[in-house]
Length: 228
Image 1 (cartoon, helix red, strand yellow):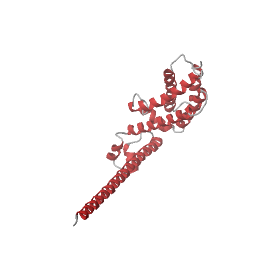
Image 2: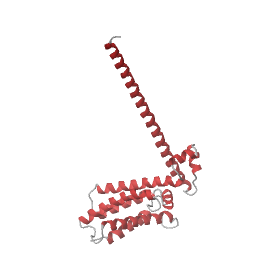
Image 3: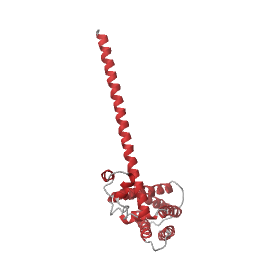
Image 4: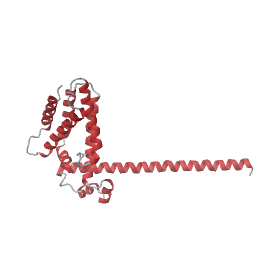
């Protein structure tokens, strides 16, 4: 074999090797991608099944066995995704904060005075919570969205409260909100007021069931207190 032919042969072998490695890399990525999608799908199925059971029979009466039996998976498989039943609710709590954040962002993207923003914002949030009372009762009773009982909620809550601060800060700059109190304090007051109303409504099964009315009253109370 001439040197030129030998060089071509080596080059061809190297090309074949590179091609094979490229195909193997693509196949590996596809396998990993499929595996991750399957894991994400099962995680979502666990959450959705748990939510249905929480709504139907209550959080306390729902066992992990109930969830795994419906999905036809083992308890060890469940525990690979969630260390406990409470952890499922905490995941739901994070989604709750994500929804709240979207409401705040929506209000910040529209021009309106502060009073109109807060009324519309909290009315929309109350409608969503009121439409799913059994689930929210479970969330409240478990402390799944309480940043004190569930420290992993501090960051998502902080994002939501930060957006509320921006709404109130804009109101102060326009002369719609008092400057006597710092925005930080005002946002904490409003957030605490809303959370207290929701918690009370969620567990007060014998009292009035119109969360929207309670939230409307809370917002009007706050607006009167922050007038300049």
